[in-house]
Image (cartoon, rainbow over all chains, first blue to last red; front, side, top):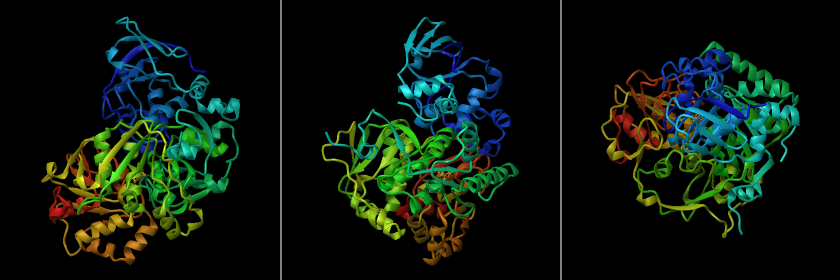
Length: 168
Length: 410
Ligand code: SF4
């Protein structure tokens, strides 16, 4: 079950962060060794990413987050780093779905209202983000109910274990 | 109200959520191991339809590392246990093999690879997903979709000499931007369709995901029929067109005669410029191949330009046919001979240098012109390298000069 109210710090990134930026393709040989693979998260983009993250933080990006390959290792390694939600102006379709399937919430909202280091409180059920640093209140785009049901169960595998099938 | 192609295949209106049976679900060697792990974790014991499930060992094939070899072993074991199809090292790139062997008009196809959209050229609703979605689609034989809204791309006119399908799709991506069609279906229409070969359609559909699109659909017409017949699947043909009164979110028009040879500059696909702005950029490597441009027509184009000429001495020229069928036909037609004589290195059918796992990783500061679909930083194995994308004709002309060259000038 995914927590529905999350509190943490924003780590701000730019537009068009690709899955190669998140976890470069050249590490594909490590994909069956997730602990090793995850050491390379954002390696080409943000040196020392791992040491900047505290458990419970958020990645806050611009438009088209997660574009590129279908590698589900991208949301997986982000989740393994301690990030509990991604906020972006828009997200690539496959990445969005993969993140939800891994139980990692993606909220689409106007991330210009968030600066690096801001403290945020996110209510997933309501889709509302409160920026505790600036006092701004943001609402995120609603996801389809089936997707939200998958997220609430903590991802697609727990969802399927429980329901044995998709339920509309 | 009439229906778009996407709405026809999914039989619902855009915005609706549908749970649909899939006609083909497939994995490849870099996303497959996680899919199998998720499948095993789901508690679902069997796959729904082994004959509609396929595994392709194409991305790092032959294997460059011990870990990859072990991943390949896992895929082979899974194929044996579940009785699904498996395509081995050297058979070719998943998307090319899906087009040659599986994709039929009206099909729903999901693959653990973003370029699954390629099969939209055959009027299949084909889209990429991650490993967990694919694991469940294998187990249940179905998945869920949100029926996308559609952008109609109306094509008129004919390509001028030296300009190809790759230039068209690069130019469209430049106009839309890397996220301009996120969640949308692109549907191609207009009077030029009948003149676009299946090879050209596959190149175009292949790249729609670079504008964020979920699917890139061509109607099923005589071109589709003759391609299916050539692959021994003539019986699978059925005509499929959008309704005349279908409703589109956006309609764009492109006159093919107005296009120039295009080049994507590092490090995003939508950073598209006419070749005139790229002229003279020095290249250490040229790569012709991939699911975008590794087909027979592409090799023919390159071979005809390179025939009797030599690649520039300091520019490596790598050529990887998209499948075994392509390789055999290219040998028969003499293209491989011409390419080798011009100084090309022929790589086995597969993804080869495309994603930087083996066979052509770039050095620091090197520049490569590639016929692939992606030039993200680090894509060819080195974040310090520069990748330019263009058509096979531009690639071949550039290999001769050792710098980016307008194919109309050689
Ligand atoms: S050729 Fe390149 S883009 Fe196509 S499937 Fe292989 S790695 Fe992906």
